[in-house]
Length: 148
Image 1 (cartoon, rainbow, N blue to C red):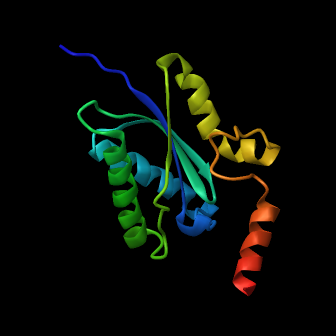
Image 2 (cartoon, rainbow, N blue to C red):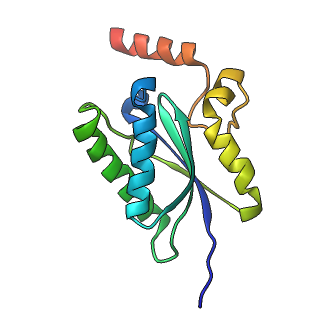
């Protein structure tokens, strides 16, 4: 019997980096990400995020490419969220993937599940996070763009 233990840290953003994952739907977004992943044979070790992006620690079967797993999870979760939760919901096309060893799983899972605290305390890992943690800068940039 073959044995394969592959661990990935996935990150992707909401469409347009809009703060769509409001507290009222955050638990449902995370639940749907877990459900959709499970349906596609992907094991979710942790889910977390903030209003404009999500993090997942997953194990993807060796019979599935990582890009195919991400495409399936993002596509099915976006469709489900549009139907069940928020008709305006969508994910950006881009995503980030980092692999890690099983011995790092507890640390990666803790980082993911404590995303709100990391962003609040500015203790995020820059190479993993999609953009700056400076919410004021993000809001100011959106405001400038809207006035152009």
